[in-house]
Length: 291
Length: 246
Image (tube, rainbow over all chains, first blue to last red; front, side, top):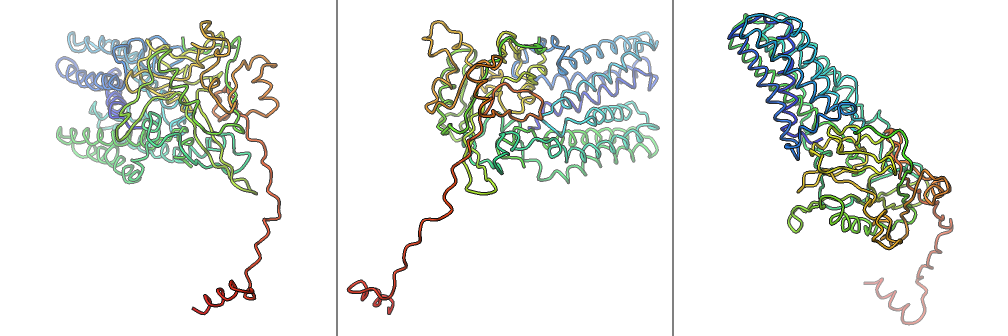
């Protein structure tokens, strides 16, 4: 799949932002006044910034509000609802902390639950697609949630749990890659089933419909990035998990914490780039671009 | 709403005969011609006369080589457009309700004024039947020529999809799969019409008729020509020997 910058930015940034909102909703760190304001501002910049980035991906962003209508069937529509609900509930909770210095705990818990639900709905947009076997696995939501929880803990300055959550996310990431590498082969979809000609013999793409590219080949048959996939996986793990975990275990300083956050975000973006670039859509079979 | 209808009254769709298709791409051209100036946004081209021309098509013809265990390879031309699935994943993923499947005839359509151009429906389609138009930024797909098949301004013989009407080989059929005695239902039954990617669970309506078994070439090959011997008489014999000596 084409790793569009807007979608990578959206899932990476909003994942972190909603992760931070989850911890803030539970009262970690227990902050009020200006300090709370800074934490909430950061969380809203990330989550709202991510959501805005996602609208750059749309052909008609001016009609984006219509995406609220189909919550009964569409995960994208559900995500629109959960994200807005989370932002509203957490705004009420944050206002209590910043302006009145009181924690309206039940509202915070509700906001925390909604934050996780938002990340879950984001992940289901991808995980629901049977056409992309690498995404169509239960580990996809687990991966998105674990990265959001660990990144959020990192941003919340929870130096005691964040390193361990990062390690868990790293393990899930490895499992996701491992399962994903076999996903297309085990999906049962091949050029033989795609054409229905497998009964006759071995099918090979002889000639594509046209000599140039098209929307499908640009959007769904992305092959450039696979060359360095293995190296990029190692880089992603080092930046996303290993380096921030080590930095958090060192004696605390704001500079090291900032470095840990930057490293983690860079790692998540690398991982998310691979999430798209390595994902094979079954339509590639028709174009002879897949085994 | 993007909820799929439980059952459609009719199931309009196409049967494509892979035994007959000659791969002329006339269906591709007639489809683009009709659909660029009728239902919905035109099918635009980008850089049409430049280095990298590209454009929106609702129907494309692939060609595949199939090598059986015994005998020569076969070349099969393979037109592909929307299969108007009964469990259309493109419809349920749509966040705005722009994509829908009609209850009365099962045609899957896009309401272009509701489409936000997110592209998720194209991701959800395993067949590559949906393409985002490069100029209008809305999703385009086969409408089964919904503006022809019910169009009383057209002569009756033209009230079928443009691709079917134009096919010079007669490789495309249009009809109602819900009627067991329709042309498409009978062809599917008699010729063993195939469903593409059944494992994707989309329950496509369109069917493909597999190529019929080919005649086998006789086991005996064309007899080898007699080799020209050295004992040729006359001038040719002399020439043969002279050339050998050179």
